[in-house]
Image (cartoon, rainbow, N blue to C red; front, side, top):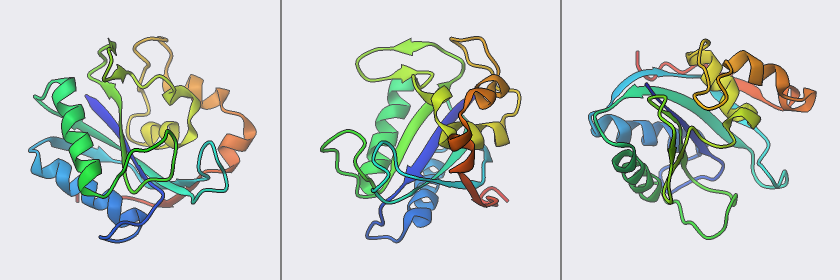
Amino acid sequence: MIYLNIGSNLPSRDGGRKTNILKAIDYLKKLKLNLIKVSSFYETPSYPNNSDPKFINLCVKLESNLKASELLNELKKIEKKLGRIRIKKNEPRTCDIDIIDFNGEIIKNDELVAPHPRLHLRNFVLYPLKEIEPNWSHPVFNKNIDSFFQELDKNSHNEITRLIKSDILN
């Protein structure tokens, strides 16, 4: 299984943060990926600069015959279609799509590190991932998602809000 985290904290020409995420999912569907599950939308303060607009994120579970590098290239194209401009790291953006886990493979090259190297530290990844895959286990650390969930500090649990349940695949 492949897990993606999709986020947005800026509006685009197409609409607001939620619209950007929904359009990203529409683009994923056009790639003929087998979307299996989509989490609820979650809102968190922007990281690392809390004064930037808040993020909305969700997690998608899917299957694909694409290689990891091919999928990454397609995800970058989707981000660009939605108005993402890459200037500096962690800046506000219309769309951010991260590969969280690619079929449990351990990948480390100039283009991609999977599983995502900081997923276990991020509430906006752990909450939606736990919602759609409560038994997920980290391929590098050999720990289940509950372990990482318990390691989040109190603030990380308090600052995240589940906005709406997703009915994208219904």
